[in-house]
Image (cartoon, rainbow, N blue to C red):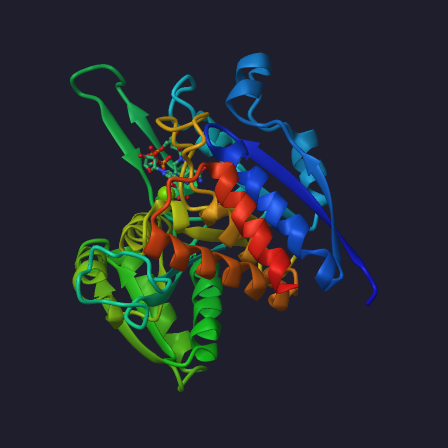
Length: 354
Ligand SMILES: NC(=O)C1=CN([C@@H]2O[C@H](COP(=O)(O)OP(=O)(O)OC[C@H]3O[C@@H](n4cnc5c(N)ncnc54)[C@H](O)[C@@H]3O)[C@@H](O)[C@H]2O)C=CC1
Ligand SMILES: CC(C)CC(=O)C(=O)O
Ligand SMILES: [Mg+2]
């Protein structure tokens, strides 16, 4: 088999980010060669440390360098020593926007054996794919503040929804739904209150849906969807939703599938005009940083999403299989392993499958 070299940019970032990324990379190194892949990694020191040292979040030069890679693996950004939003907007959202990551793909899947707070539900009941819009909505950064610091202060934060931006993510979600056995797509929004944006999303889903007669479509207001996640998760197959709603409901999705330490995501540019970026759903978890307590599984599953995106589905399945086995053992025997011990076990499982 000929070997393909993938140029991978690695941004560990802040808090537990570098700890979980290190384990993701070890699993990647263990699985890649058997699938004809070799990864040429470049590490970028971005995040709080760099901001304190230089005042920079992301320079144009670094952005340009990142553009030259095939994919990016990111841990998390954000640190209590930096004003909230500086790194989240200046680094993470800047990359999502600059590289047109309009699909934020977040599987919500209960692995066998994993404890869920939903007493009478199992893996067959919780297997959804949330397609969160990644470049618009309230995250766009539009708005401002008037009369700051006075009793008359007014802060606005606009939600931006473009026809083009909504249509491309809706189209992606329909294509995903059409590939899955249930062929069901749910639009999650709040069109009874956010009437302008909601109407655009509804009309777009109706129009694109005409091209996918095999996909059944329904709608849920986001507040009801939050409730259904915890009392009727089997309602959902593929969900398409805006940036903020998708952010919130996927943390609920993580909570019902074993916790935030297991939840993976991909920031995808489906046209491959820019490198896609893979990262756990969680943040930098300053409360447990540096203690070896972080679960690297979410990052390892994000590596599987990356392998899928890079056209190596067999390698991706192998990583997921290793995680599934690890989670089954954890369910039976419990686990007090450190971040790197979980990494050791996943590397060993991936190697055994080879
Ligand atoms: N994609 C990103 O880079 C994200 C960054 N953030 C940033 O991260 C910082 C912390 O935000 P929080 O709201 O506390 O969210 P968080 O996801 O970092 O932590 C929430 C809770 O989950 C736990 N947790 C997170 N990841 C874990 C893992 N792998 N294993 C075990 N436990 C884990 C944490 O210890 C904490 O109790 C903030 O600066 C925030 O802006 C938050 C979310 C996403
Ligand atoms: C900008 C990030 C901190 C937003 C977030 O929480 C996420 O993408 O999951
Ligand atoms: Mg989030």
